[in-house]
Image 1: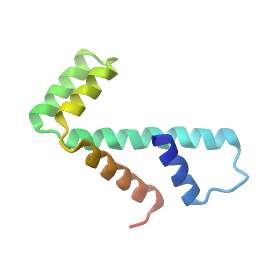
Image 2 (image 1 turned 30 degrees about the horizontal axis):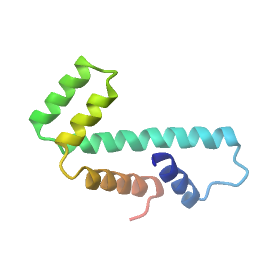
Image 3 (image 1 turned 90 degrees about the horizontal axis):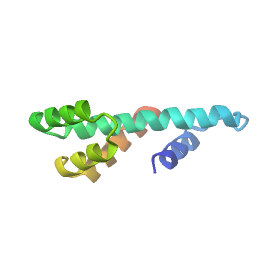
Image 4 (image 1 turned 45 degrees about the vertical axis):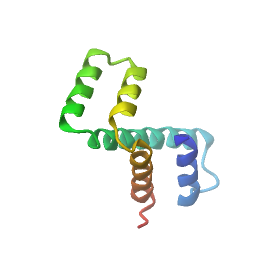
Length: 99
């Protein structure tokens, strides 16, 4: 989902058609990582201070357990779909410079 979102942004940005495939792929990868970072930050922002501390503790105790982190977010982030949508909208605005 994120990769498709990023590819659409790049299309809207109007990248030059002669961009090398390796450069394009790296750009997609980098922007996807930045988008995910922003989504994660906004999900943490949506938590209470206590929930954010519990989440930090979970990550410190089990840094490789992606499943546990996702379950915690699903359980503790109210309106998760709206938070993700708002983060993607924010990322789009930041990247394209549109209002």
